[in-house]
Length: 207
Image (cartoon, rainbow, N blue to C red; front, side, top):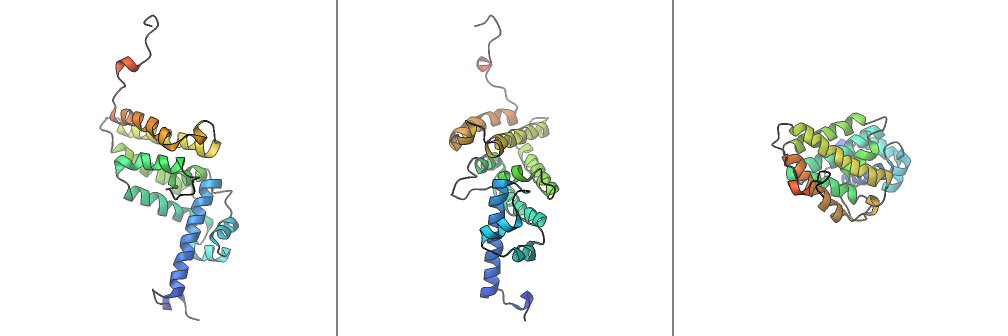
């Protein structure tokens, strides 16, 4: 029987293999975002993809390697394709809309659900560090790295409360409303500008 190297690149068999691999990646991204790395089983991923478990191991080698591929495919693609000034908003919207039927970037939802997993932890940590490095380029302040860390912590905190904890009213808040509130303050954090003095609470006795 001919091995995969003997199969022409445009053959139906090669096309089917690519389609199956893509379905497995998409199913894994969905389930990692919904349940987390530990709770998403290989069987569930294969079932959702309409594929055999043996194919998952054939194409990716292990569940940990599959997570790495998902993060590389989604997170790295987001980093490459998104202008730095749009990265925070893109990641935020991806978390806010991760349960929608319409396709959205699920990179940070996968990150949040998988960061505590026994396997693949270094992969998701490294991705978080890359997000912070990009965010730091948006700040001209001397403590840009700290400000980027705070921005990332804020982003992940929002994601934890909405995606993992499901705390109301944030869990069901309109994504556009959340983005409007958050992005307005993000500029102040990264730019190092304070809110106008009249917006701060007055000192006692000044009311």
